[in-house]
Length: 620
Ligand code: ADP
Image 1 (cartoon, rainbow, N blue to C red):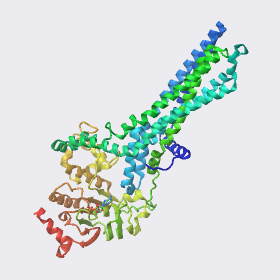
Image 2 (image 1 turned 90 degrees about the vertical axis):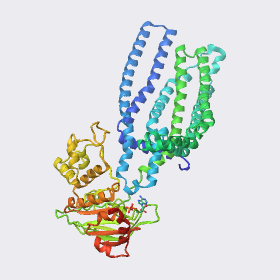
Image 3 (image 1 turned 90 degrees about the horizontal axis):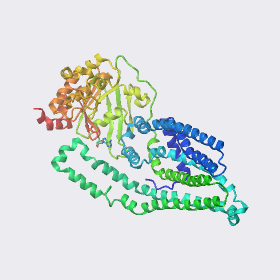
């Protein structure tokens, strides 16, 4: 949390900016809330005013006709206002029910559109989890605006109505016949009463905001604590840990961690504050606001006693002045709350305002029917953001169209990085990558993405029908889906499926959904890559969970499936790729050898030869 001083200007600016974003995602929510709060805050004053008129008439003239019409007016007004309030409440509630969805959408949209480089960065991930934790913790950040907007409107309308009803308290004078009581007509009393009201109205929320400021003090501590609790508190919910938990009694360990970290225990900072200063400030805030009530009653009752106004007006004035004070308090509290919200809003906008720096060109990748796309890496070097080490160094490679290219090397040698750069998830730091002789940055990004199908190591399938998985769309060509699945070797399994390609994967959404094994899932992922029908198809070790022999089988079978596409195979297992036309050997981010399997084996001092012999035992 930044320690910068919080000014009123920044308070207004950031919260208003947040207001505008919420209003954009949740149109009508603030409007309905505004109207509902406005009507709700005026209703009690209308009641106070009308009942004062009735009581005054009862205590005074007792004119039956006047009384009847007052009662009818009161009934009709109350009825109309109640109906209006009900309608507005319904409208505002239905709008508010969509808030959480909109809140998530604000962040999802940002995440979908963010440069992958940023999405993947530790800093942005930390920011996002802070924002979500602050939101969950005490609705700090955007949600605070949503929660307190009603408070703002109610307090503003409340102040306005109360002032209107209070004016005559000071203007109606005690008659001369009341003797010493005429002292109450002295304008000094106006100042005195206003003074008391203001003092208590400002003191009460000031104490309350002071109490709340302890939340802000706690934020750094709670950030860690919440993360800790979020992990260990929900340990039992993670079913994939169940085996470890039982074998190693990790349940005890989880409780011990929570105890030692002391986040929600009786000695935690939050509880110490609540028992101490935070609690005291809350109590003071409550006490002070009751004090003003005493003086208001005293003044109003004395004036009524002396004959300045009727008995009915006592309720009107006491009610109006009390709520004037209450509403000013509410307004001050609102401003304080917005001020306390500033550090959280800074975090929100640090995330939402992150600009995309990746240059995105406008050239289209020509849709060549001959699929003659060639790609060249020219002296490409790359370091991951925040890292000092080159993940790739001076890589120069040219792919020949329609060939099979293998990228092999030990884990961590830069193979996946090479593919990530090719797919423009990151831009090279030095050098350039060319598609048909043109720097890939100059192409329209979405268009460029169409050139590649990749089956990543950690591909994910959706718990939706197989066809939608393969086509990555709700609209698909069933024949092509089945053809892709057949090519990927899924034919037999598909025959077993009750609803064919409409069968749901997993049971999340359909009780008849099917579980698939790792190998089957991978075939679906491969079918998805085939369905996309891009000129380049890349397999980035999606087979890592399989044994070397099974992987080699899949890779060489894939060779037939790939047809006229340019295929790139990545593996740390050399045997999987020996059929390829060209093999690039990566080591510490560099291409240290290239050639065919036989050619590379001839160099007895080469890395390929060394790796091949080291791995040979697995293939025999
Ligand atoms: P391979 O695919 O050959 O196993 P990678 O391309 O994944 O290797 O990784 C190359 C190097 O880059 C490794 O040293 C790895 O630790 C590092 N690296 C990979 N991804 C990231 C990342 N997101 N941030 C920082 N370093 C990374």
